[in-house]
Length: 67
Length: 264
Figure (cartoon, rainbow over the protein chains, first blue to last red):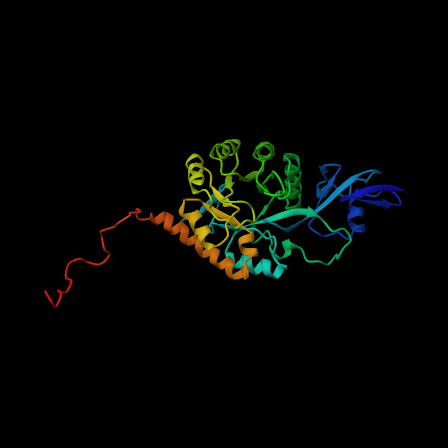
């Protein structure tokens, strides 16, 4: 069991998963997002290779209207 | 007339830049942006609503990067670090896109820029290869420093963000423009079309606005009005206005050939 923080909310997963699997799980596959893990950008090309670890802090962002 | 706005080596026909916030829905956003004729449009970067409404349309579907030059902003950032992080995320989100709007705010009441944090963020971003259009105060000395750091456009406020108070200090804008070579774009404070025209008549290279359009009773109509105002103000600036005179003693109609009075 691992617990990660996603946009400030804690979330548990039964086992360590890749960033790509996490994206799929969250229903974000194919969406235009950017992801930061513990303050560092994870490039899209690295999603499959990086594994989430217990205690990770993730930020997942999208483009919204703004001035 | 070949009168292009050139920012970071790319030329634009429209000198009106618009934001995409505060509209009632995406359809209104799209219609207003269309009516404004803007080619550069600002967007914000925010946390995704994880797991909520997965089929919700995305802003970038209605305003695609293929059609518009998107300008991700750092609205809501109060430190250089947060602004830099936000724009790194924006660059990743937009496939390596580097043209950005930097704004680092001082407090939530005024949204006045914190120029010390802004300068720190600008240095980092320029070093990382970003092309930085920077929101700042109308302080000419700070504007020059931001240009020297390598910012590609200086964007002074004309009055506070969202205030609609218009061009409150035209003298400062003129001092600023005298010192800066890169484009100067009034960002914030425009309330109605005449404000935009005044900014352009002063010689500003462009105007960026959001609330003046989005908070109008009819945003799409106001977007069209702003397009015309920016064009009119620009043409008036290029044409060169007549000097102001307290008395003219120079009527517009000929003084010769006036019919004589019947009584004389």
